[in-house]
Length: 376
Image (tube, rainbow, N blue to C red; front, side):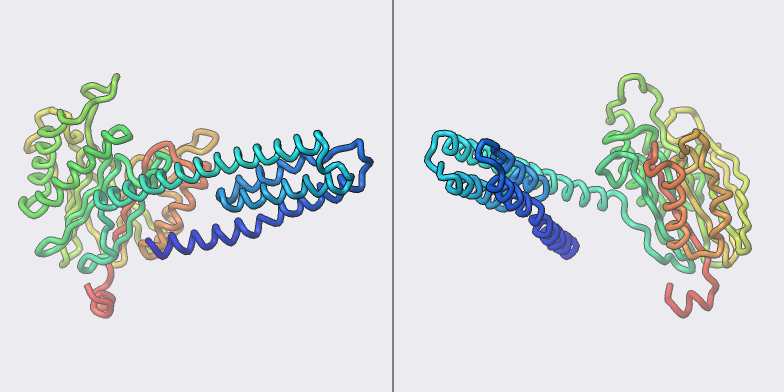
């Protein structure tokens, strides 16, 4: 992270120094033209444009230097006409100096606030990464990739969540969506992620794991303040997957969450059938009502788990994103490339910005020889 920031700082420094040619050229042009014009025409006051432009891309030091050059240029214009100590020229020089100092002062204030904002962003970024751990590229025979697109400005995560953990004979994966946005949604997401990481190793079946997560959400949900107008409407949709290392059977339990896409080589896309239970945290009696669905996940197939921010993304005409149709174009891609294509296509469909958070996980079952060569 530090190297990336230093590289960005160097690029910003180089670009700002390259842009200095603009105010310098303005100072030269205004000064020369003013000297060539008749004495009763004064262009000197326009020199204030130079420090004003510099402040838009440089810091207070460079802005102050350009302001000082503008003051010197104004004095040179007065000297050229032999009026260096006239009342008119003195007023123009003093006014230009005061305006330049004012511009430098605002540069100092802006730079200080940008520094504070950068520090806040750094802390928020670290906290967000601690909350939403990246999924490993490989989990046993599985090759994985994940993607998060936050709807909130300057945010990296929101109410959508995902997690994966290695078990004794396979992997368990969860993807979920907290109703709502903002800090309350992030708090509930953190609660569910922590509960999953612990309970995933304590319950032998996915329905039992779903029951435990439901209890955890209900137990702590009262600690989060509910926005006005949303009382009693807080819940979390979740999809739980269990993928054994051996065999081709995958188990799935859903709590109000959409079914994943199953991509097979040859542009084939299917949706495994499921029996959804109510979302987590509704407070309805669903203990034991979570169903275990089973489907085939063959070598070479790719599962794509997603939240409703993907399928509910609209274009300018209000048309939903045709996820299954678009994903069929990239069934032969590896997980990272697949999500790269989906990300670019989804943002293009939505006009560059989503109306809701979107999370995706791509899980590819690699052949045994592939796993042996690259490690598990």
